[in-house]
Length: 124
Image (cartoon, rainbow, N blue to C red; front, side):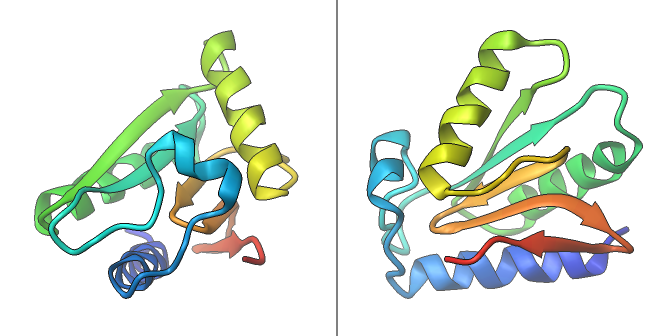
């Protein structure tokens, strides 16, 4: 279980609760500034056969179960062209290069890929 991923996402969630704004292009995608009583949306893009995604998905599901108000929106991008197009739009809005999966968006943060148990955070 990638503990550092869980910690990074929890910190991002806390940042959202403290009122961190989302990028302007992201506000129409339900990741706008979030109050504590509103839903925190984690956008998770994965590949069906991706071994790292097979680990990441359950961690995100556990996070959603354990933290009230967290919702994980999953989109498979290796076989679903429409989901891949959404990922490309989100990556452009966040100004990140998507070089692989998993890709996670929370508020104003984006994580692309996975390396030695730690996701790579894109600059805010």
